[in-house]
Image (cartoon, rainbow, N blue to C red; front, top):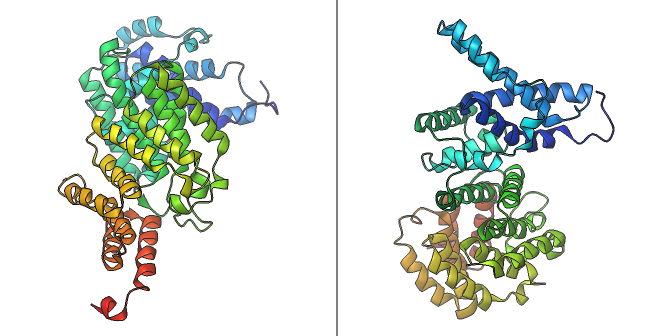
Length: 423
């Protein structure tokens, strides 16, 4: 094989093929941890050889065959260590793959992998890490960097997750339809968390991690292709498309945060907005509306407004009312308070925040102070707004958010009488 000018870029190709090949290997050998290592070794071999020699005729079959060989070596090594050479040789005769592994590559087990990585036996943090590694194809170093932890820490987290799967004896198969319907919620939640962390990083010097948000969108597209009739899968995909469409307008050239109301909407990706609206529109008539569809509908109302003054806030409030009936997530209630302020005034919204401050899930979250500061500013209580902008800045781990909040506090402080500021 020779390298052709028309060959696709290797890194995204490997990222697409990794979960498919991993599914094949796990299905054959029933050892998730060893299979994941074997596929990673096969991907490293491909990254070295394909740029030099060109793509094989069937890249997925190539990766599958190399991974099979790595697994064969692994089992032989383990068997030798346990002094069972004869039994291992017999077992390898049965497990050894054919020379042409193309037939093995026709079946796509990506959805099974997602269900396995998002199993309720795992914590959300472990599920996110394992999904990004096993299904997303990110390296341990990339995942560690995204979540601002040492690579050794992330490696231990992933290792524990794989051991948990092994100890739980989770079968490599799709759950039954009833269980799958319940478990799909876990899969979508993990993808939602990955997207949110990428779109607005909880800590660090950058507002967003494009690799995480784009990876979440890619994986959600895969789930949508495999579950085309599920309206909430489509709703989550639409939400990601409609939200991510604003990414270019969210920061200045220096990386400083720009709030939605001040963004240059000509920078919004209109083609992506149209895609998101099309996906959402296609789902709404097909069944009961769920939380992701409602969040996507709210994002669509924002995206379709030509300017901030044209935003249909009564419609957004009505959608939040429906969403609040479905979810006890305090962030939903917090965002609804903003919509209430835009429709009924800031004082009514501040009353809602007084009730929310009793929710332990929001007690130390910077957004509660940030929203209160915004509402106090709308109510022309600048001193109170300054106090809460500063409190919010002290609670966030995101440097762009901290700079923005401190900037808002400084802007309002300049308007205060000197005596008040000294007090």
